[in-house]
Length: 200
Image 1 (spheres, one colour):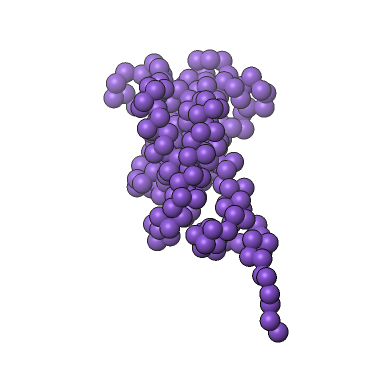
Image 2 (tube, rainbow, N blue to C red):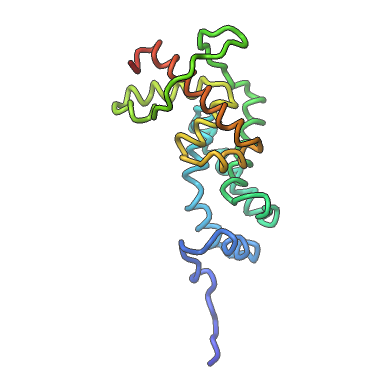
């Protein structure tokens, strides 16, 4: 039996794994790009938005990430980590370049002296305490005010719900560094939110 005019684009499904989609993308299959875009656009956009605090900037960063992917799909090396980690890494680098150029990175005034460590808090889920829009906005502003290394781990681990190992791959740092940064970020957020009257 001979199959004629096989439409590979029509055969791309949401269940196709990342590697298969990348192979099809490298062959110029538009549907493969669409599937990857639909799979990762939301998380990449949210990461860029939470990191920059600017919707237009987040849209431009997301566009740049996918332009780079479609331009050079073969640049991704699976042995170095997941495709998600690779895309978040591109977004992180693009954001850093933009933020350095526009000086958007504002450190959090957390009331602590240089080198002073905050008292450790219980491992609470800060997100669970926010059930009103104004409190969510308060949290968003507080996250945006965190210094970049702490903001990154909060966005990746708390908002995007990555595991420590996934976040470590994106940030290219040891697992312990992710854990310690996240612990410090939670304490900084708790202090800031308490001062703003957003948490008890």
